[in-house]
Every structure is written in structure tokens, then in C-alpha cells.
Amino acid sequence: MADEKRSLDFDAEYIEFVRKLEARTRSKKISWSKTPQGYLAETSTMIFSFTRRPYSLFAPELEWGLFTVRRRGGNEIINVESPGGGILANAMAMASPMVQAVNSLYIAVQQVATSEVTDAIRELDEL
Image (cartoon, rainbow, N blue to C red; front, top):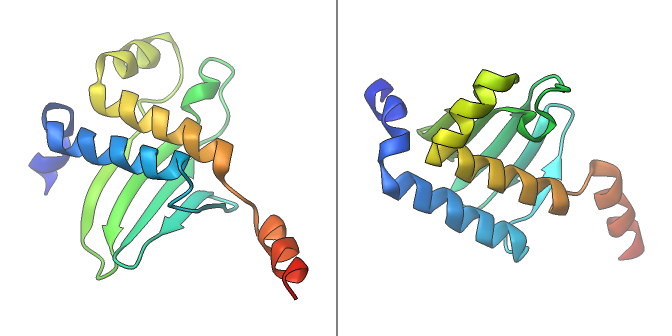
């Protein structure tokens, strides 16, 4: 698995997966919830999560720290760490197709995610 994580940038299949996840997110086929740690979404077979890192003035668009995809049984499919903030990290991120894809997904998630309070309000409205 460690070699798999290192080679994510070179495997088009992983990038395609993230892009499809972004498309399903933008079309609201996958619902993301905002949590104190970041964002979470689930399907019948997978769990997707973004863990936020502290906000950076140097790279606010890269405020995610870790993106993971797991099977419900616990097997990790994808684990991508943000390169962090700063000029060098931004340059590294722009050179990495996988990080670019995850950044794009993160932006989509921020736009569509609901908070626990929003979900509770909707639930009350449906009563």
C-alpha cells in the first residue's frame, strides 16, 4: 500500500476516480456534511473524508490536510496529503495532477456541503 500511495500522481485511474467523485458531488448525487474536523460523505460501500489543516494566509485554497477514501470494511483506497502552505508547496501542488484533482474536489465540497445544523433544520421542516 505504501508504494501505491507514492505513485498516486502517476496512476490515471486514481485521478479519474477523484474527478468522477467531483462530478457526482457537483451534481449533488453525493452529499457531503461539514464536521468539526473537515467534511464527510458516505455511499453504501465507501466513506470519503477531508480533514482540514489550520488556515494558511499563503494558500487558503489548500486548507485541506488529508483526503481519504475507504471501503466500509476499512480498506483504504486513497490517501492524499496536502503539500501544505507556502510558495514551494503551491508550486509542488500545481505540478501534481492528483493534488490538482483533489483541490478541485475540495472546492466543490466546500460549495455543496451542509452543516449538522442545516441538516437538522431540513429534518424539522419535513416533520
